[in-house]
Image (cartoon, rainbow, N blue to C red; front, side, top):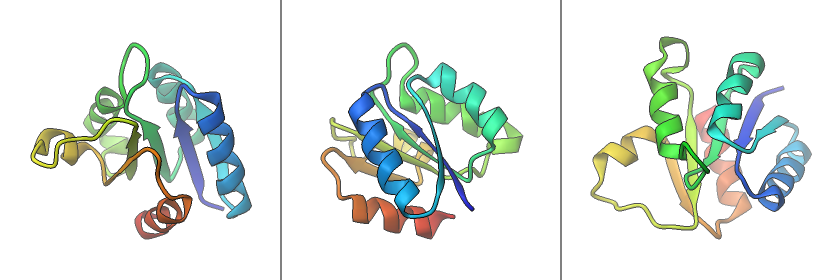
Amino acid sequence: MKKILVIDDEPSIILTLEFFLKKEDYEVKSANSAEEAIKKIEQFSPDILVTDIALPKKNGLELAKEIRAKEKFKKLPIIGISAYGMGENNKSQNACFNVYFSKPFSLEELKQSIKTLI
């Protein structure tokens, strides 16, 4: 069973994604901050991350950069989600995420992206 770590500071988003992804036969864990996510990545060894960009303290972009800096997780697929658009021309941000979705997004599109990436 493939493992997914969902990172978001909104409990309703976490519950929705957990329910949907578990129904799709994934093992799902969650974190509500970048700091908690770093710990869970080490413990859980997910196959993919789905992270909100607008997290408290350390945002999702900083989290992705930190993960990419670790050799062990350099190739870990990361999907970014945010209520705020991300500039198409910002190569630095785009390089951190394999896929990016603006909220609201389609759960079916998310599912397809996850299947493609893992």
